[in-house]
Length: 278
Length: 296
Image (tube, rainbow over all chains, first blue to last red):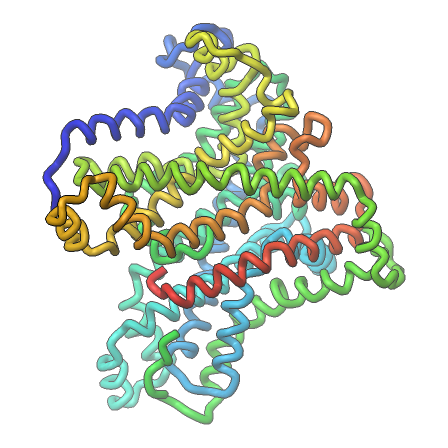
């Protein structure tokens, strides 16, 4: 390893601070009283700082009272999506990695090939299907299509991981008379916790941040997830009212920020391993 | 792909029972919509119209005459091409700097990655505020530096560049991580050998780093082009496709055709398949790259 370079480190810290300025600006704006927000020169420290915009966005004004609800909607949809993606992907990836049966290679090729389908291409037929099921403006109408978008990627990721697991433990369990379900739930899944976690975070991020699908699949304001509620918050206010909008934006960034601070390494490794999908 | 190891069970229903939930989800919400979209593209389906007729290639013919669709294709291609250089270069420079024994590496990598954890709506709103022509800090500091300030998003000649800037800020961290992984796969001995041969830092960058990163460049390039052709959220938040049609993109045009103005599911589906055809070319390229590089 080359030695630590103080000069380069200082330059890179400056770059990182500069890079984060737009995000800092959002946070700073959300904490300022309305009168101070549009003051020039820009004030980078909110004085006085206030939580009034958060209070308004979460509780008071009728235009924005739905942000709290939107937060809940996003949480339900994202958690539901994580559970569904991890479950179905793991169940599908296991036989593809460990069993031999007719059609295995065709199924795997089909799944990997489907990674090339852009989400925008299935938008209209997916809307029609969701409508026919009576799922517009419902949680399942967001969770299930959202999970289907991430599913094939999950299978790909988990199958690759299952293939790297040593087979000795499974062989031993097989000799002891354990069935495939027992081996899968008691041996394979516990050994796969890191990759299941990475997939879970990936699925959470996709669902939490997705905008286009809920924009068309939800038309009841009380069912909007955060990105849609935020986008509409923008048109609810005149352009000078950046305070509540930035408070909403900050709130929507918080959960992933927390996940990110706790699991920085794992997220980045997950992106690295996946590389496949943004 | 490596072939799975020897089978455990044979001739039973077990594998299919495992596959059932996932494949049901996949068939109903991925495969069926894909094929149904192709079918719809040959019909005059609309929202709420129960009966509709097959119109052959009518929708595709209409697209040949739809000047707004052409404009949106050109805009999307412009966005993809114009953003390619910054997307290839900025994360690369940052990754190389972080790879050169910088302290606080994990923290710095996290700082650049952070915007990628935000939704496109949050990113769009942040930049909408930064670029506010009257009270936004961006124009204020430009003026302070003696540079011309303008309404970046309201000016047809700068609106797309403002969107590109927003996107670069959003995704740089993602590509940075990909580059860092690629850089770490380059054996240190090659740099040591280059140094022994008297190569300068610049020389070893061009003779060692660039050639060995070639597959990563290709991966970043293709991934970026595929993503670019689907750009929607940034435009929706920042400009709504304006001023005029200066930033109208394909997915936005598709969205408006299907869900805002005319609810024409047939022509929107035809647009979707034209888009799919364009993306497929790049996807197949990416697929070939991935097969050669299973570590990603």
